[in-house]
Amino acid sequence: MKALLALAVLFTTTLGCGSSAPLGAPSNLTVKPSGGGAHLTWMDHATAEDEFQVERKDPGGSFVKKFTVTFDITVYHDSQVTAGSTYSYRVRAASSSGVSEYSNEASLTVQ
Image (cartoon, rainbow, N blue to C red; front, side, top):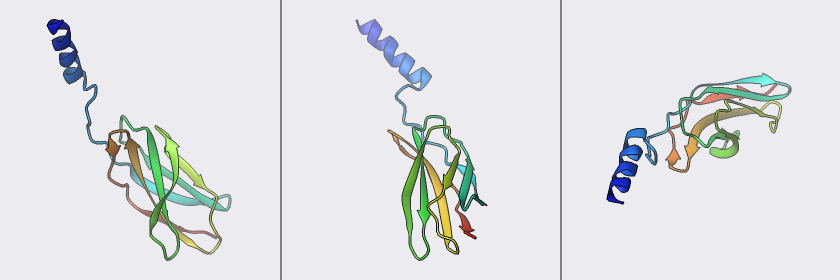
C-alpha cells in the first residue's frame, strides 16, 4: 500500500496533476465595431482555464464583470451597448485554482 501511495505522489508531482500553476494572462485584446455592437478578440495564454471573464467599464463607471465565455474561446460580441458611448474592456482567465492577471485594456466608441 505504501508503494502505491508513493507512486501516486510521484505521478502527481511529475505530471503536474493537482498543481496550482498560475494561469497565463490573455493578451492582444482588441475591440472593433460590428453589427451595432462591440466585437472583442484576444490571445489565450492559459492552458488550464475554465472560463474567461470579460469586464466592461461603462461611461463614467468602473470595471465590472459582465460576461463569461468557456475555456479556449477567444471572442465575444457585446450587443448591449448604446450608440455614442465609449466602453473599455479587459479579460482574464479563471479556473478553480484562481484567476490570471488582466489583459491589456481596449476601448471603443460605439457609432
